[in-house]
Image (cartoon, rainbow, N blue to C red; front, side):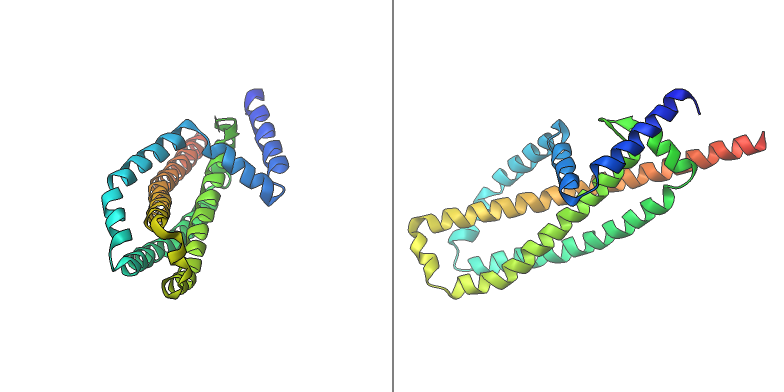
Length: 211
């Protein structure tokens, strides 16, 4: 290992030991990473897609079956997100199992966006897991609150703004759900890269042992 690789390893290990001491620091790191151009482009695409679905959202808000449509959306999303959450945990455990020995050194030596590959992948898996936990929590609260809202009379106090509020809530909910679904693509690609780096590391080690 040359001097440059040693410096990269030292810088990466120092960064991980200092910048991930508390949950708040991890969240700040995630927010900083979320402000990238790649993420912003994805958000714009999702917003445009949701705007195309606005007529459906408007119909759901003015229909006599508004509660049925919203409840069905929550049920479908909840089942899907719980399944994806379980898959993410399984993939994260697989990632931790793969990143050991020569594979771990390879990840620590590769730098991207001021962080090494191990740091980037680890942060990506953690943020995705938090995202699924958040949507599961939102669904849990909605299942409790929606029946109360349906039977309550105070909702009529919003008057003409009632439908607008429903549309905005559906829009944000659907946009966030689609964002988490698209993040699954990055999760699968990260796992693919882990397998790839692991195979390369073991292949190089086998060639060295053969020499």
